[in-house]
Image 1 (cartoon, rainbow, N blue to C red):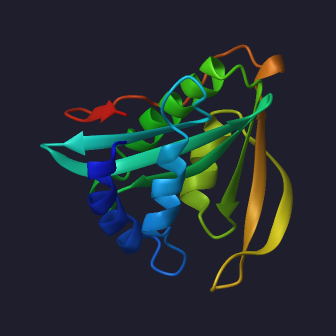
Image 2 (cartoon, one colour; image 1 turned 180 degrees about the vertical axis):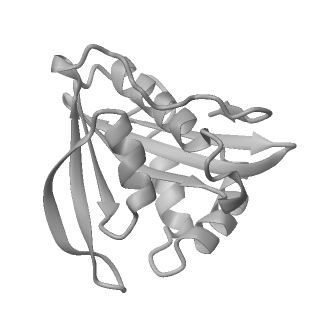
Length: 165
């Protein structure tokens, strides 16, 4: 993701997460940590015909990575795009030498939970009222790649879609 991607990403963010969308400042702040030799973040966008239809981000700290966000435009649900984005983020976790990957997912987002479970993430707890202002709980999930064989069962085909920084 580059600075010029922020506006179209924000538009998609507001459509998909109207109650708890990230702000422009949150994206700018994370992108500031995604470049250079001291980079601790990786953000990718997915384009179809020059239009951003998905994005994802990962932050690394020590030996733990955290999936910050994954979003896919509704018309691309079920195409494997979410799995493709997650695959890119897990590659980044490997590059950052993080054997554990964490994430939070809305408890009412069953579609996302199923994706994460296909990749080996397991529920480990809850964060009550994590998503505001709706006061929705988060399911905390973890992937322990140290004991993982490295194979993900998630589909990674999303025809006609380009994933890049």
